[in-house]
Image (cartoon, rainbow, N blue to C red; front, side, top):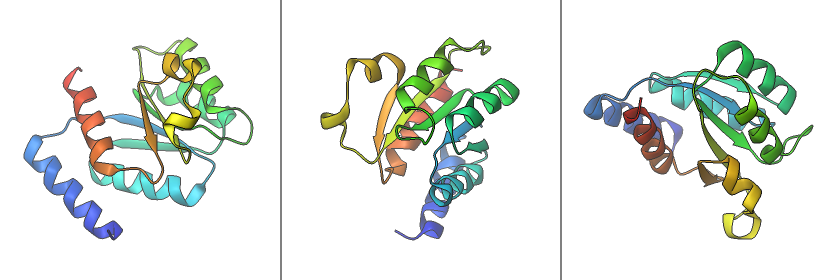
Length: 142
């Protein structure tokens, strides 16, 4: 489905359910994918920032204090599981929603470590309907 079609669907569904805007940090070393993802989520009214490695993500988390993290598991400087652990241990104002995003099938890569730190697991390419449900469910708890 073309990006414009996803954007139109997101906007229509947002208007129907009055989605709460979330503060989201995307952590992915694939710049094009991260920036496209950012654009789609911003079109939904979310405040979205992007970090391209773990160090940048930790610095950004301290500054903007996101309530949602979308974390690629394979980053250049740290594994996504370790980054998620550090984010869980960070002094954030509330327990964040942390979603693993990976190009690997969950069944072959999931471990106890991942289950402890991630609230959800999405496989690339990300199913935007599933992500929207996750974000809507999280927003409903705020």
